[in-house]
Image (cartoon, rainbow, N blue to C red):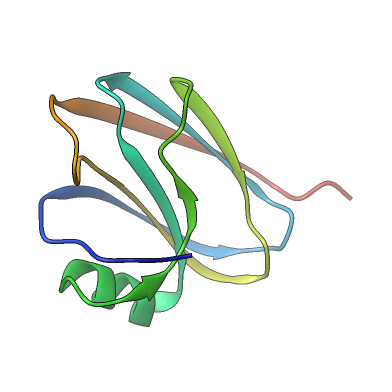
Length: 98
């Protein structure tokens, strides 16, 4: 999926994650976009409002689990692009199942 961004966001630098790892995101407040991006290039494009690739979207629950599709350096962003309100977020990561 590709996207664009022109507003504030919360950034989590997740570092190296293996394929199959889980990122659990808890949202407190309004609904928000949750975007899991691989590599610094996609994150930089997101930050500058350019096209980028991501996993995620607008969750329908306050807690969402995203599965890391491939091994690499990952970034997660929570934003209110196109939405009203405010949100706080927290994350937990879980290693891939053996």
